[in-house]
Length: 204
Image (cartoon, rainbow, N blue to C red; front, top):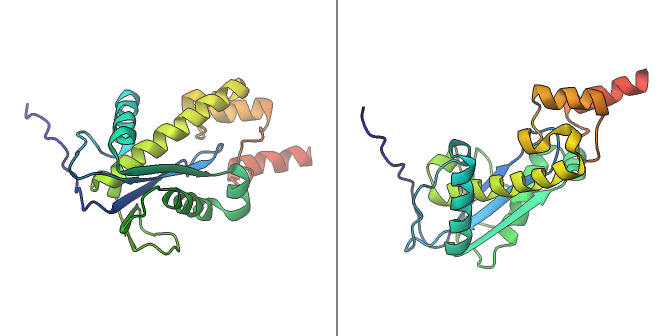
């Protein structure tokens, strides 16, 4: 068997900030974004798209990123903002907040995906950037671990939904719990399954 080759990501210059989000698809909870400026002189091994890492690896790398990055910030857009603005605009808002919260101003901002927020920073979108650019991969990891931690805390308040297992995604278990218990304040009422359920509850 051929040994697996390590993933080599683009490091970039010192003033580069990577941005990524977590939580666009779930039916509940905020959307979170992270901005990370790595130090090219202190590379972090194992960075890649957070979805391709185990939970233990994500947590280990998150600790290392927070300890060794030049600057980092995690921000969110709330469920109320998601319902008011729509999920795309709320995601862009969370990204703006994350970059604005950095203690060191970036020279360039590279965002995972195909569009950037309308902001003052010089920036570019990088499709699949979380598996190409180290700073974006680091942002992916911080956003994912922060949101998972938030959803585990939400599980303590609303254990009937199983948030700690599915993180708010529309799994069969989650949908069954919604049918049994209705929506809680952290459910996104603008999302189709929740909106449909609420509309039906009004009708009957």
